[in-house]
Length: 152
Image: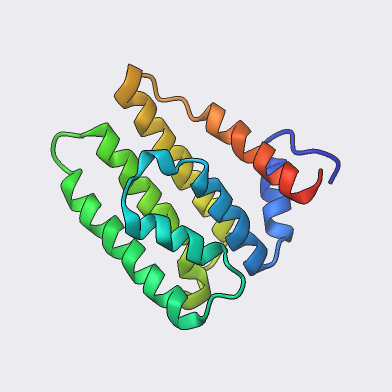
């Protein structure tokens, strides 16, 4: 792939990756937005997900931690939206998505699902800051991360 110009190019690249490569790239997408979530469980889970030597038991533990965080933050964001907390929630969801496919045989491309959740998080953070949700910058950042990793 010569370059990644748009989401169709990105998705095509992500579909060509092995599950392990998807997990690594998805982890890089999350790392680029970890400033939105200060939870130690999520930070640990992302590192675990990206390590190709991680055992299934440790992956399972990280998945449960990320899922617990995502579920817990979902229930907090239902009434009056705190956009900053909502952004952190989406980072938790992205991390659970990143880890779920190995253990649960999830359908679809995990890195793409992660990319969309990270964009949701960045949109929420943008709304919290200036009232304008625009994930286009995050989409471009993801294309650059993928291109750099793949040497495109």
